[in-house]
Amino acid sequence: MAKCRVCGSTSIVISSVIGLCVNCIRSGARLDPDPHLASRSRFKLQLYMESGEYKCTICGRNCGINKNSRGFCNYRGGGGDGI
Image 1: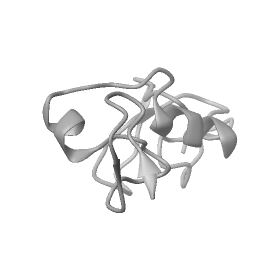
Image 2: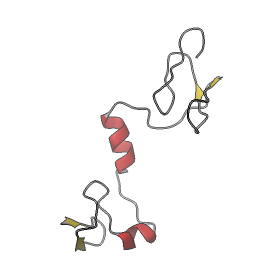
Image 3: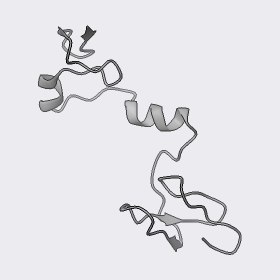
């Protein structure tokens, strides 16, 4: 059973990764640090989308990729000559 990190309630349906109960999620409670940012950092993924000069259309994010960087999904990279 996990415990909500905001209100302290315990339940079997609280995710131990997110650490919030459904009531706190619905009320808009946020944790610091954000678990999504922590997860992306742990796997050395880009934390925020860039607006680079090369457009990637592999996934639905349509992010921009700069030279020598990778897209937000980490699938496609910008080489020296573009994507």
